[in-house]
Amino acid sequence: MLRRFSTFACFLLFAAIAILSTVCAAQKVPPQLLPPATEQLLLQVHAKGDQVYVCQEGATQFAWALKAPDAQLFDKYGKPFGKHFAGPAWEASDGSRVTGKASASAPSPDAHSIPWLLIDVANHEGNGMLSRVSKIQRLNTKGGKAPSSGCDARTLARKCACRIPRTIFFTRRNSAPYTTRYSDRAEVGVDATIPISSTTVTDGSCPRA
Image (cartoon, rainbow, N blue to C red; front, side, top):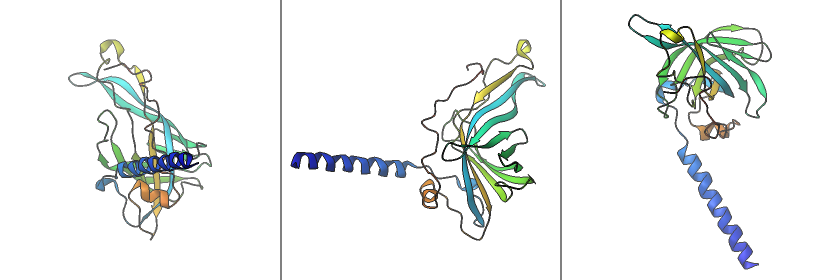
């Protein structure tokens, strides 16, 4: 009986250490990507899809250029929420839609991933979940950068889709202070375990560097 209790106690200790380590390792959002204090977190979604690039001829060389994002959005329970596409635009399944423009960016902690962004919403369409959104954060990107090779005269106008999971936070204007850390977001009912570090990332049809 004592041995069982000791084993169980050790298990709880290791579990507590693992949880504490995870919380301590949570990355803070760079200051330039924080919405104003008058913004309040409205909802969090996880995007699964691609950054679509097209091979173009420039003034001096051929290069891959971003054509559009193409992703499906899922809520924190894994249920379909909407889609993300050219604009850039985000559309919920209830028909509400927003388009925006990046106002700030920061390099991803992963050097092989596209930057994190703060986006100002410029236009609203429809009535629904996204009707009140004023700011958008694109965080936790994994991959998605344009290929470093494979674009030349033979592949001109060719498209490639680079897989890029990411987490999207929508905020709205409110007098409540905005929370800045993943651990804080968990306290206001947002799942802080949704970041996509466990997601398998592939390059889709993009040529390898």
